[in-house]
Length: 110
Image (cartoon, rainbow, N blue to C red; front, side, top):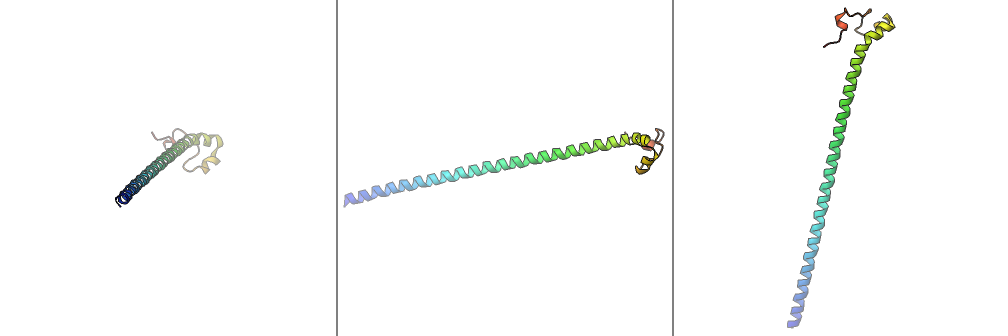
């Protein structure tokens, strides 16, 4: 009887050790899964931030190009009007024929 009780106690201890090992393995898997999930979320946040930076840069570039085009058109319009004559000046709002340096409204603002 004593031998049976000792054998039962030994088997109970072995089962407890196995249960603790299984719990530790489960906790380690869960920890690795959460760490991987956090790394993936960080990568996504980084990609979103990079795309936003690229979008802002592209928008700033479009604005800059647009302002340069507007400035070039403003500066070249009198030249085009003179070369194309009064008909073009009539189609261009704000321009009068003939365009001359004496007309201050046609000079670029400083």
